[in-house]
Image 1: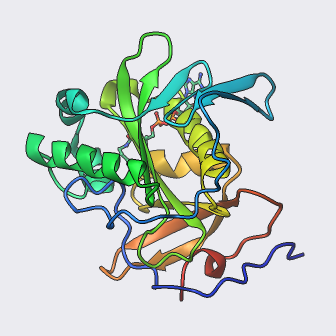
Image 2: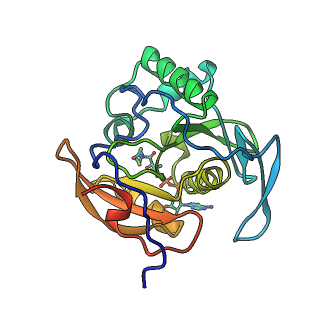
Length: 239
Ligand SMILES: CC(C)(COP(=O)(O)OP(=O)(O)OC[C@H]1O[C@@H](n2cnc3c(N)ncnc32)[C@H](O)[C@@H]1OP(=O)(O)O)[C@@H](O)C(=O)NCCC(=O)NCCS
């Protein structure tokens, strides 16, 4: 049974989505309908698994990982963590110090303008060590309004501990609390099984495969953020 139908008109069709896009500019910052009651400094989130999550607008934590905005001082660590899978599936090309710094600056501008790109570093809560990045883009070309496209990456030494899954869960909570996004989507390249295992851990549903404007096949997963919904691929992106 279809419990939830998106009634908003479609915008541009699903072109490519290429993760955090270190080598390509983010969309021009624009207001993205963040509700006016976006949480102030700290708030506590109840978790389906029990316990709570305490976080601020620009910092969220579940006690194991913390999401925080990257600053230029993170650029060196971030650049060092870029391996071949990251280049292929996330960055969209080999980064340099200049492109990473420019990407961090674009994210700052988007954040400060309540723009469409919500980008966070993933840190270990116990030590503060930066281990990866997670990003939601509310203006990914080809996606319907209200769809937040989540991408993620961990530096090689941090994989295999569940940190990316935790980071994406925190990101979905940020989207609920600080944006008007109705759906979270994850796009996975068919040759990226490590990434494809993540959405199912967080109850994202596999909706199908699409071909981007660049001719890339992408497995598409999605999850309704605000109310139960039996989503279809057409709810996420334009035909
Ligand atoms: C995609 C990517 C982030 C996945 O990393 P990951 O470490 O496998 O993902 P998680 O951090 O969620 O960890 C889950 C893994 O840790 C294991 N794990 C170990 N201890 C764990 C714990 N305490 N809790 C949860 N999982 C744990 C899980 O079993 C799982 O391994 P499995 O998939 O072999 O079963 C990583 O491969 C990456 O950075 N790739 C390059 C960039 C990329 O492809 N990004 C995706 C574009 S959208």
